[in-house]
Length: 259
Image 1 (spheres, rainbow, N blue to C red):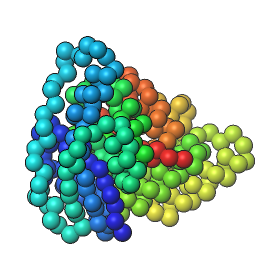
Image 2 (image 1 turned 120 degrees about the horizontal axis):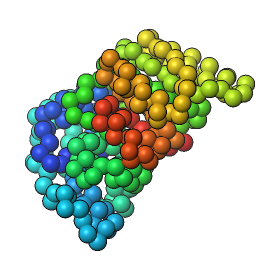
Image 3 (image 1 turned 90 degrees about the vertical axis):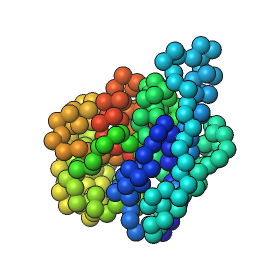
Image 4 (image 1 turned 60 degrees about the vertical axis):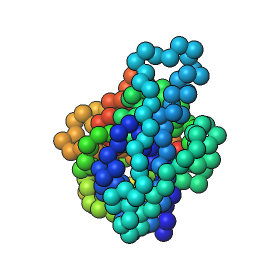
């Protein structure tokens, strides 16, 4: 099986570390066709268009370092090319329409303010998104089931795209309080499905809105978690400028955008 992956490469990225991270997270049995994109120019233009007076703290974008034949890129199943053209909403939308995943370095977002930029960026693409913070190994998983089809597909897509070894990690499944028989049955079927692939599972009823429950779980977790979200909760996380940073900056976050 082959996966087409867009990956942000800006501001002095370490190509060796980047490939190591990708190989540790994504399915090792699938061929990976990586397309590097420079988000800095795109984000700078977005800020300039949004305000006639760019922030004084905004740093001029640095050109991405050469990613030609990076170390590890010739290993089996890994192919890389750098996108040479300008990036705008139209181009980003077109590239993402055939991509299986967009990987975003959270450092790039933070250098451009971070709060609203990430939500705008994710809205511009059509593929799922993985936001990676610095030096965050994955030692556990947190899934949110809000009763929607998107939250189910997020897990199905995760199982297909990500390394099978991640299924051996402890999994916390956050579930909504079921309102009727349909919700109860939907939740039961979902949990039964999770048990087919994951062994160490804990179920937790959300006693607050999902974003607050996620933050509480990340803060209390003794193991570095990776977050798996569907469209609704993912948009809720991204739409809260004052709160999403505590999630995005502390845990790799996978968001499945479609229904």
